[in-house]
Length: 248
Image (cartoon, rainbow, N blue to C red; front, side, top):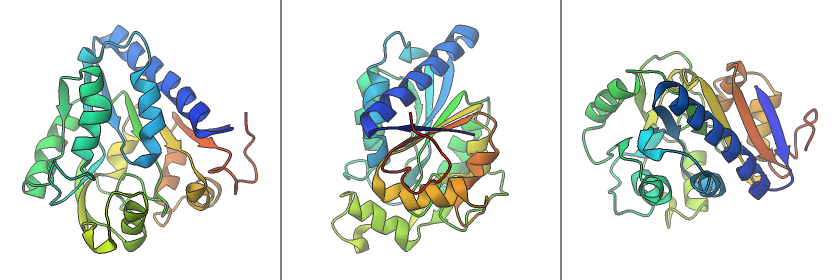
């Protein structure tokens, strides 16, 4: 795992987007198509803006999956990750091969159907973030590091739910769903490359726990340290509690 630290989240986002664009272009050049996994949430705004502005990406040759979705949230809800991705990525660049997790359907059926498509061929790159509680996708601590199922139905812990409210997606804690569909940890690790985008001071404690302490289900994103081609992009704020990393 490689850690890159930048002065602010704008420069972080552009550096991560450059790497992401290069991976996508290379996959298309070598195989005729690229398969990607997209992350959502407030931490990904600048990265997706930068990525969608990158030149010379044939988005018609990109197939997209995503990490997670709330159970019971309609597409029209402001917090819907399907809506987020349609607005900020899919419709913006014209991706026409995408597989959205429908949180209004039977969760087990959705997990099985989309999971089979996801597992049918290698993923070229996964974009991920780190939650304030250290979660990876919606795998809250203690995360399941063992299951090989592509997608899981998971319970959201209070710290995770408070983060969603704090980011402005929900008016009250009671409005935040208790369950979600999430890509499993092992499925994320199967991606050939991983780009982890983690800006902002509110993530500093989780960054230190995941990338400086032991690899543990109690710090789910710490598992990224076992991946041979994972790059973590931090800004000075999110890296503030690291003692060994050096900024650009």
